[in-house]
Amino acid sequence: MGTCANVLVDLPASVILASSSPRRKQLLGMLGIEAAIVPAAIDEDGFEHLPPRRMVEELAFRKASVVQRHYPEAIIIGADTTVVLDGKVLNKPRDAEHARAMLGALSGRTHTVITGVAVLWQSLRLVDSRSTLVTFRSLSQEEIGTYVASGAPLDKAGGYGIQDDCGAVFVESIEGCYYTVVGLPVELLYRMLRLLTQCTQ
Image (cartoon, rainbow, N blue to C red):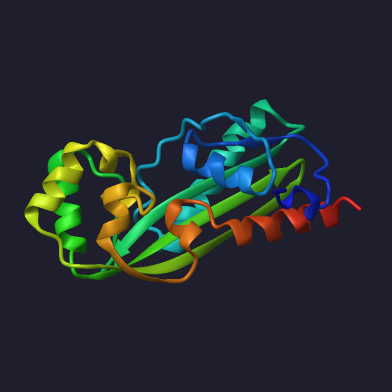
């Protein structure tokens, strides 16, 4: 079975993903894109004062910008994901206890996952985001403890990954793009890359 590589207009340069996330690299592979991985080292603190959508877009752009300085000829893709509950941003938990508190707060509730995406190439700057509503079923303390003990929640916004074994069974329903919750809205990225190729013609 082929990939979307035959559908995409040929990209004019190599692609670099400004993220160490294996999930995002895998999603790029769905589009037939073999991206090099160059994680962006930026300070992600100090942006909580921004509206959540603006925050993830700004962080995605900054990640991509840092990498572009070192690889000016490549197409750079940056992304950032956050979870919002009752207007409060839930980024990656500080430690196991923080992860337990986050999952307890999400239990039996509906929250919003927002992922910002930035695509940079030469002077072109494309930045956008998508949001998805996620509803958790009620979780027991045992379930939360088992998941936290696995270590999986510690590198994920909101303290969970929908693609994880436990994370998947916590989710009762979603309204919106599944891949936004995973960390890279594929349809949005596809359209951004199509726009990039059109701008080069």
